Image (cartoon, rainbow, N blue to C red; front, side, top):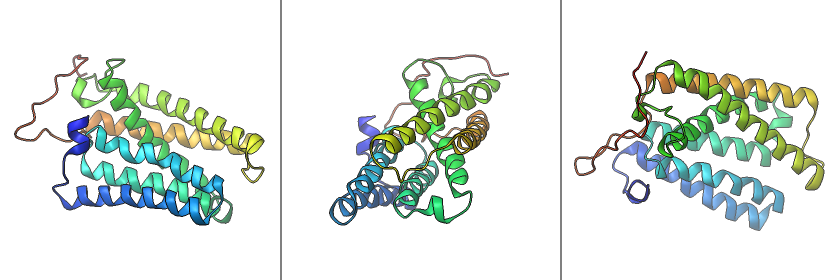
Length: 207
């Protein structure tokens, strides 16, 4: 992970992904200076998700897509786009949960908990089953955070039964799409000429 995180960008896509990380950091600073403390907190929550793709050595296209999605989710809250644009929150829940599910799958695979990504050579149906479950779990945590924020931080954070269920449904669909991607595509960057390929921690026959 350290080698991947410190590896200098080599392509336009990698430079773009790193630029998004810089934008994320500068956004937190700007929000802390000129906006409300809650806005600074919301933008800061996006930073771990911005850094993880680089730490995990994900492919540049996924790194870039992940950065755009996470920043859009955070700043849509700051600019009240969820209230201004009908069903925008559903679009963000779908896309953001798909991205977070892929990152979680990579972490679980590397930790040896369960082989989901291509490096573990799972059966093709494994990510199709497990990724939606991960997505639903992430969606539940997301909704818990929104509830906590609405009760203890700001009543401007709107939560409700219909909103919660709709968000979780779209998050689950995002997880299903993520599972399909994991079954078909290796989202982890190929090792460089001097970097040995990682041995799969969990293996199994594809089927």
